[in-house]
Amino acid sequence: MEQLSAGQKLDQAFEKLGKKNSLSFELDLDTDVASLKALDAASDPAPGEEIPDEAAEVLSGAKITVTVQSKKPFEESGEKDLVGTAMKVSTPDGDLAEYRVIGDFTYIRADMDAMGKAMGSPLPDTDELPPQAGAIKDIIEGKWVKFNTKELDKAAPEGQKVEPKPAPSLDAKTQKKLVKALRDVIAREVQFKTADSGDGTEHVTATAPFRTLITELLGQIRPLVKDLPPGVQLPTDKDLKDAPDAKVTADFTLRNGELTQVDMDLAKLAENAKVKQLGLTLRMREGTRPTAPAGATTIDLGDLMNGFLGGPTMSDSEFDMSGLADEDVPQDY
Image (cartoon, rainbow, N blue to C red; front, top):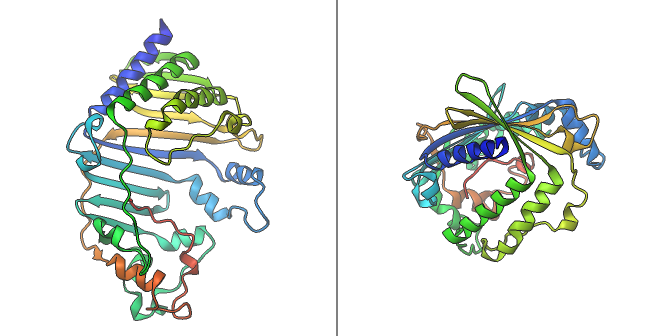
């Protein structure tokens, strides 16, 4: 009865999340530089391609915070119902990058100096940029910039046509089949335990062998692929045969029946004795509606992309973009 009771409590907690129309969650990578370096070394990187110490330092303390607000409960929401979305990547030293989607506009800013140093690609001094640099200067200086989200499809470099793609979606019937398939596997393969702290906080732990669980889950999903959005490809059982089968435990914290935190220790999956600390923590709380930042500079994506990426407005000798090539600024496509 304990396993069924714990599983039901977790089920109900997830159902409560679906009834909310505002939510914030924070993903925290619980690791250290030594573990990240050991993981990188195990992947056998080419000489000179090893993860820089600065990048490992940034990743070890990185947190991702996401806030979403919808007109409807999330279980009924589609993309058109979202009224605000925000994501922020931060470290103990400050925010690295942030974007917000409010109405027709996407707002972004990034600490390009910190990101450049972490990736070993220092950025050019903005005082040395030519007048044509325009919005690029604001971006490098970490200021808020904004662009009309609807202009993304029109912003391809000249001569490159962008074909509109339908948004991927699942019909209600397929969603129900998928949820049932996943619940069947979880009920069969996952062991649940529950412990009550007595102050309204309860811990539900779910333990399962990783490879067995993933193989079973994909086996249930595979017959539904024809009903999934185009382009979805699933790994085969052969692809998964070398995946570690160590048991992984997720600890779900419930407070008054609501899910507030999930902790996972993934060190065993690394199969590397030097990886001492490797975990994930997901914290959830009631969200507040994202707001548009004041003073954001409007940029024209067409001018930006045609001028710097697709057109002759500036030559390579006039402006060196090599330091930006590896930077990923979060955007909502």
